[in-house]
Figure 1 (cartoon, rainbow, N blue to C red):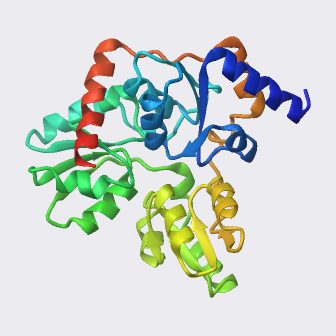
Figure 2 (cartoon, rainbow, N blue to C red):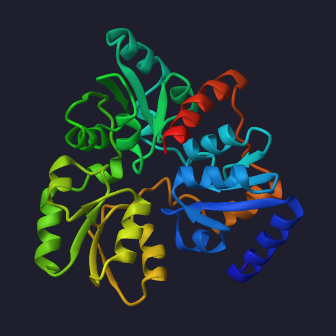
Figure 3 (tube, helix red, strand yellow):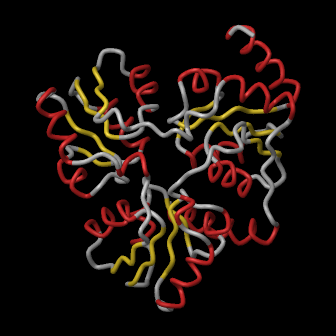
Length: 303
């Protein structure tokens, strides 16, 4: 089918299925354009829990669809590309967390949202890149086990030196591949541009940035800023929103390596097939779902 025809079919199926389509900021342009809402993973999950539709088509990766299911257990959650995973989330397992807790029995356990439901079920509280500092400041424990992103954990440790961060050796393969040389090259090419990076980047990259924040915080900062040129240090999909919201401003990607292959797996055809065939349905063990829900609810209480 041609693109316009495909979109028409998607919209018809969406109405027929009483569905909502949500897309992460890192999805391809076409998918972002047909989504009802575009945003970061947890904001989308909260939106899905509050919206009236019974079917959620989550254009993202596996852990994101799981989070939506955790917050909306009575709804049908579809992941259009079942093999769209997150390498960072796969770097830690529930057993890894159990082993860490045995080594550090007095520590609080915090998991980044980029984890599986099984891992969330073993943790005390969850966090996002936006609220991680607030979440960890809310804990009475001095020792904090933090999984899986060592780069985000390092960033937090510098902001809250009174806490002892026990970091898992995980990372986002997309953000981690950016290095200090990329910043220096970008600054040489665009000396009048501000550098905005995600805290999933390496510490040496974060140190050279003008602003560090989550995807949403980067979008909000660039939109509110009086400056007109920005070097963006997060996944390239965010440029869709930035350019749409700020047509008068100029955005450069910090590195051509800032592309997540898993986020790019979802196409318009994927969304169409998901609605047509009602695939792929996200199912979670009830016990895991309930335990994982506790870590998300505790985060919501803080933020």
